[in-house]
Amino acid sequence: MGYHGPSVFEGKSQIDRNARPAWFTENIESIPEAGRQLLERYSGIAPERVLPHVISIRDKAFDIWSYACIGQVRFLDFTLPKLPYWSEVLPRLRSGATFLDAGCCFGQEIRFLVFKEGIPATQLHGFDLESAFIDMGHELFCDRDKLQAHMFSGDIMSDSSAPEAKELTALEGTMDIVHAASLLHCWGWDDMITATKRLVSLSRPQPGSLIIGNQMGSLDPGQYPMPTGKGFNYRHDVQSMERFWQQIEEETGSTWKVQADLFLPPVVKENMNHSWAKSDPNLRMIWFYATRI
Image (tube, rainbow, N blue to C red; front, side):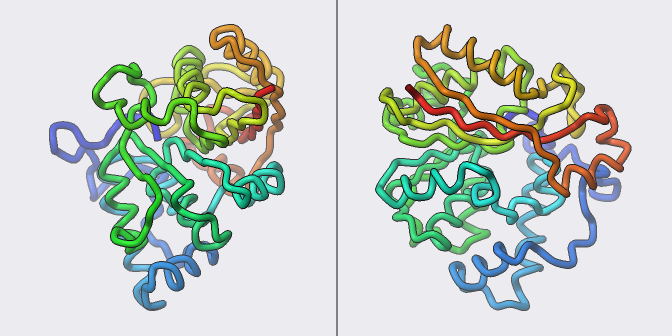
C-alpha cells in the first residue's frame, strides 16, 4: 500500500463512521469462496464466525487507511492466480524462488501461496508501509505463532540508508520474484519511477528475475485525480508502460523485457458506475510482467 492519504492523523481517526465514503460497502453478506476456505481450513475459524471476523478486521483497517479494496473486502479475492503470468510464476515458486510481496496489506497473497499452493513460507517475504496491517494480517488469519514468512513494515519511498528501510535494505539483490499488486498506482509518474527503482534494487541482479503486478490503467494514459483520496496518480496503457520501463532501464542500468495489457475486471466495471470513480470513463486495470535480461 502507498500514499493514498491516511485516515488517521496523530492517533485520531479522520473517518466519520456515520458518513463512510461511497467506496465503503456497509452491508457485507458474503466473501469470496477462496478467502472463506482459507479462513476456515488454514486459520481454523468456525464457518459461522468467518464473516463477522472479517468485517471486524475490515472496519478497524479502514479507520487507518481508507482504501477501496479494504472498504469493499476485495483483499480476500486473491490476485496472483487470476493474472495471465501465473502459470509461469507458480513453477518457479515450487522450485524455491524467493518472493517478495510489496505493499502486501494483510499479507493475503502470501497466505494463499502457503495454504493453497503449498509454497514453503520461509521463501516468502511481505512488507507494507502500515505496520498495523502486518499485525492485522496475523489477527485476520490467526497465524501469529505459525506463519514462518518474513512479514515486516517498510517504506518503499524512503532512502535505503534510512532506519525505516533497514529490513528492505537487507533484502536488496535477493528476490527472484517481486510482486506489486495495486501499489504503483499510488503515485504520479516521477514517484512511480522512484518506487519501481526500489523494486529493481530488491530483485536479484541476474537474468530471469521478475517484477510483476497490476495497477490502475487507462485507455487514455496520463495523470488523474485519485478517486479515493487526495492527489493524483498516473494510469498507464501498454505504450506508456513500455516508455516507463525504458526510463527504469536508463536510470538503473538494468535491462528488462516487459509484457503488459489492459483488462477490465468486474469490480472495476461495477465501480465505474459510482460517482467517485467517474473521473476517467476509460479506467481499466493493467498487468505487467517484467523479466530481467
